[in-house]
Amino acid sequence: MSVPKYRPKRSNNIQVRPFGALFQRRVCMSISPLAPDSFPDMPPIGGLSLATAASGMKYQGRDDMLLMRSIADSHFAGLFTQSDTAAAPVQWCQDRLAQALCQSRPAAILTNAGNANAFTGSKGHLATMATADALAKAGHIDKDAILLASTGVIGEPLDTDCLAAQIPHLLADDKASWHDAAKAIMTTDTFAKGATSTCQLDGKQVTICGIAKGSGMIAPDMATMLGYIATDAAISPDMLLHILRRANAQSFNAITVDSDTSTNDSVFAIATGVAGNDEITSEAHTDFNHLYHAIKTVMLDLAKQIVRDGEGTQKLITIDILGADNDSDAYKIGMSVANSPLVKTAVAGCDANWGRIVMAVGKAGIGIDQNVIGVRIGGFDVALAGQRVENFDETPVATHMQGQNIDIAVSVGTGSGTARVYTCDLTHGYISINADYRS
Image (tube, rainbow, N blue to C red; front, side):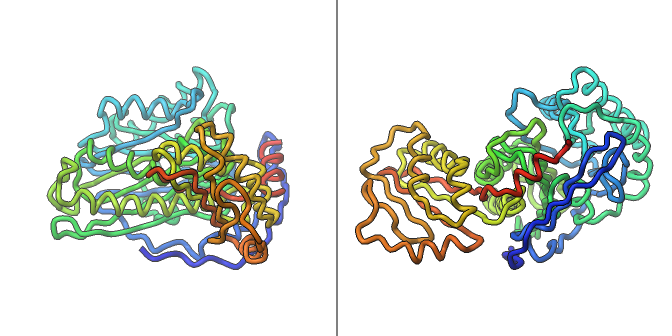
């Protein structure tokens, strides 16, 4: 898959404008300076249709609903937020996927943007049922084969009438592009996020396409992010979920913008099987790794795009942890560094403050011998064996800190545990966006 080119640095101009019956204010931002030049050319997936519509529930002049419909033999998998305050649509999806109610039958995923339908009590659960009922009746789909996703403001009742009114349009006009689909699910995102890849399975070319949304409230266990991975590969439901879990650990669960885990994060995988390859039913299948790596490539691309679109972001930070006792410890250390406001603000200020990195390593609570810690920034040694390197020249490090892609590596011992995580800097723009999100 080609690596996207990135635009030169652009400033974020924050404007606040009134809209809607609640006189909420919308934050209008320029596109992230880390955005790709363009949305990728993504082919349709055989056996899957896309449709978008505008409910008018919150946004004006844009689509905010996405319907994805599959053919009868498709398989579905999903991963969801670990939050104790999971939204009603998340609970709806978990129930249906746990009972395999979406497998090998016509099924659909309906998404709305602008309202999370989270922390809405019994009304929220009634809203999910009403929405599923409306789509089931109009589209002749079994209600239990319908998955739902919502993203937006937490705690406000969902206006199901607005959604139901657009369902006939969604069913009648199902020729939307992946770009249309990615734009329809955006909230505070500044650009639509998509990625695609191909691989050969059993002599057949298989396509994987993915879209995602997310900009803030991004942390491990996913975040206020939605991800959709679709492929025409033939694969069993169990193996589809297995691949999704493995790839998720190295993509969406390896990113953080602000350490806040959302009520609504969901990642769906759909496999239509129309490519005609020999169905992958176990990890021992000769084509398992080919499909796994292709799907992971798409998911990692999307995850990094989310970080590049972090609210107020000016810099992408890649953090490598080496020498931990195991990968789990390395991951915890990496996330401790990635979630440190002091580290993130130092990066925003182009300050190579390696002392803050060491602080964040120490607070991970792993039990590290500080006398073996080493820190590299931009490939340059800053600290070795528990102290700053002798005759340290900060000039090349300071030059690296002026760039848009910041690399931090920390060695914590001689173990085999490693981890790579991604985050972004913390700027005044993040405060402005979130202070004005609904006030």
